Image (cartoon, rainbow, N blue to C red; front, side, top):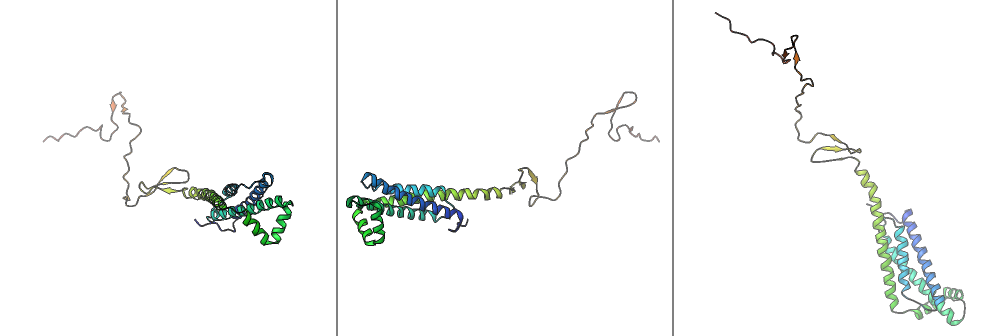
Length: 225
């Protein structure tokens, strides 16, 4: 079965849903840091799980989607890290969160400095778990979509099947119809037909008579010399 190209509506919808969920999850992570004043790195794994679930529910038969899902989960982790670091920096400096984000976008060096300060070696582990979670869930969604798309083709192919051993053709209605078997003789011996009326007939004087041919004819005697 040919893969669905990325321009198909199903694949495009799945990509759009994955990107949207990735961005929303990143913003939620930054909001958690804003209200708790603490950055929890394991939240990155939750971003991968959310992206994977969303894309699995809308997945098409395109087998590239699991890799794309892992990439979107990783992008969500990076964006979430950036927003969380910006929130932590805003709290330390005493400025607004939007002010730090705006200045970081205008000055990439500031964004890199924020990322370097907030980075921890354990982040690699959380990012890897997020990408793997998204990959596995989207892979399962693609498998389900592939099996679902194969069902109509299998149903259409079973409309008229022939048993190769018995030579019986099972049509769409399921009733068998006779078809000649390869190698079978052309003549078919017909079964003898038995008359429905097997009751012996009676003569005028009440004596039973045999309706079989020749039953009532007396046997011939040899002529006397």
